[in-house]
Amino acid sequence: MANDLKGRTALVTGGSRGIGAAVCRALAASGAAVAINCREQIGQAEQLAGEIVKQGGRAIVVAADVSKAEAVAGMVERVTAGLGPIDILVNNAGIAITRGVDDLSEEDFDRTILVNLKSVFLCTQAVLPSMRARKWGRIVNISSGAARGAGSIGPHYNASKAGMEGLTRGYAARLVKDGITVNAVAPSLIETDMMSGQPQLISRIPLGRFGTADEVAKAVMLLVDNAYMTGQTVALSGGMAFN
Image (cartoon, rainbow, N blue to C red; front, side):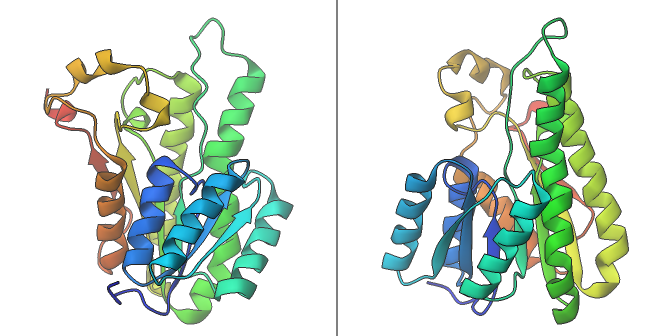
């Protein structure tokens, strides 16, 4: 394992599978102690933690619903007690409820905003005191190409991700003097469970294939490593923006 992040503690929400799991592996490979958050996939999260520990890293699982303030507060306390103060936060937790305009309900809208957007606010607020005290922090929010494009999931999802990028810029401007950077990564059409069974979408990608979770994780690591880059969104689209 590399030691670039040795002594740092990272929390990845929605970290049990897909992009979140790839980010956890990349952070651990750079020497960070990793807290893997999940809500339901506890078995997968524990398997990932075991894999990281077996390779010489430090990892714990923290189950919590990150759309609820009390759960987030408890999660941060457990991470701090188990691994130390949180230096790196990756807000990856999210849901994608596919709806058309005519079948999109108020419940669908509210749930999407809670999980995809409010969770970013709650988790960010919860880690700021320790980051400010240490004058160092990295916050990376996993957005989506849907923040700027139409997407295929629905307008509620577009709104949640556009809001996330607004939070990213707002926090970045206010935390830069505290040594804390806040950025976003916006992947489009990545090969995850969400995209399974939709090979027809590949025709929309100029590169001719889905992106991978590991490629998203590399973009996250770029932002974690760069102290001068803040308030930015890195898009991973396989060239769709140029089409």
